[in-house]
Structure formats: C-alpha cells, structure tokens
Image (cartoon, rainbow, N blue to C red):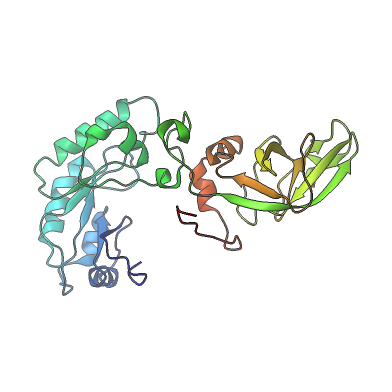
Length: 295
C-alpha cells in the first residue's frame, strides 16, 4: 500500500509477531494491533528509530483474539512502557453479533468496552459495518466498515438496498452454447438436475475455478441477456448451466452472476453463505476492470 502511494494511517489488525516485523511496521508508519502477550514479549524493549503507534485489542465477547478485561490493565501498562511504542496506545474491540436482531450481546460489549477503557486516553475503535449502521451510540474515533463498502448487506436479515447501499462489484461472463435437452434427461456432474420437459439449456463460461460458488444449488438466480433465470445442475470448475425456458438469448449474450441487476446477497443466500465470501473468493483468472463513477 505504501508503495502504491497510500499515505493514510493503516492498521495491521493481526499485528506484529517479532522485532523484525515491528521494525518494518515502524519504518512504513503502520499501526499494529497487539492482541496477545506473546506479541509484547516478542517486540521487547528495543527501539525502532521511529516509535510505533500501537493499538491494543480488548476482548469484550468475541473470544477470538484480544486481552480479557481481567488481563487488559496489565497488558496496556506493559505495552505503554515499551521503548519502541508511543505512549497511550489506542484501543479497539470487535462485535460478535452486531449483524443480528437481538441487541443484547452488542449492548453488553459496548458497556464493557467503555467501562474497561475509561482511563485510557488514546483513540478507540469499536464498529464494523453492522455496528456502524445499527449502533452509532457506540462512538469511537475510528470505524472499520468492510462489507458495506462493497454494497453488501452486513445484517442477517433485510437487503442492502433497504439501507441505502449500492453494489460496486459486478461479475459477468457470456453464454458459450445453447442446446435442447429432452424431458427426463439429466444435466451436469451427478445429474443433479432432471429436465421436467424438453427445454433449452445455456452454458456460461464461469465456474468454481473462477470463484463462483460450487455449492450454488438448482434455482440460484442469474441474469441472462437482462432476463432473470436460474442455475441448473452442479457448478463445474469452468462452466455453469442455466435454464433458458422463456428467455430470449443467443450465444455470446452477457450473463450477470451478480451486480446491478442481481444483488450479490440474493446469490449468497441461495448458496448458503454471505456476500463477503463471494467477493473474497474471486480467483486470479477473473479479469478485473475498474469503472469510475462517471463512466
């Protein structure tokens, strides 16, 4: 990121694990998170020329990484005393259930965070995407939006459009074949789809090797030539098959897997996952094109 010319402050959420990594972070003005005593031990009392701006993580209920409330005061004092770290480290936590309708867990986390860090003068950060939208009262100096930056719904209910989010990622391919399948014939690996009638079936050039979810079942929505239809048969490494009954289509037509015509959250729900996974698993063989807002 620094080599790309990005000069804004950058948090390294998994932190540093050695003096070498700490020295590298200081040299690049990165801000590592300390979430375990072994990191403080590893960095030790050496200086790095430029002191680190450090963050320390308080575990308020996620129980993944971070110091417990009982451990926090001692860990904060140890980190503050390190020669290579600026005084008054910043503090963050992470919400476990902010995406769920029940607010109890997140409210408890906010209360615990504020109680435990009341005497800490540094900056604070609590909110992910769901926390930012549903718990503005959590406050903090920094927020950490993720999925919402891509236009994905951070909640387990509802949809992105309802909360004013727009998709910024569109995945398209094209039809490479259309064929007629007879009633009773099965389509694809394992014959997971049986044609209920003689029907046209399209073949689109995308598969799990590109990042399209292999576990997408029959009925997963897809757009062909601007018309909504469904995936049929098992997703292959390089190909998917689609139902073309009632669809005007020819070989070469555009197929939209998700984007402005089909919310990624809807595809993710059909595939039994979340939109973030679909965004993250795009493989390197998928051509990327950055489109500016004015285009």
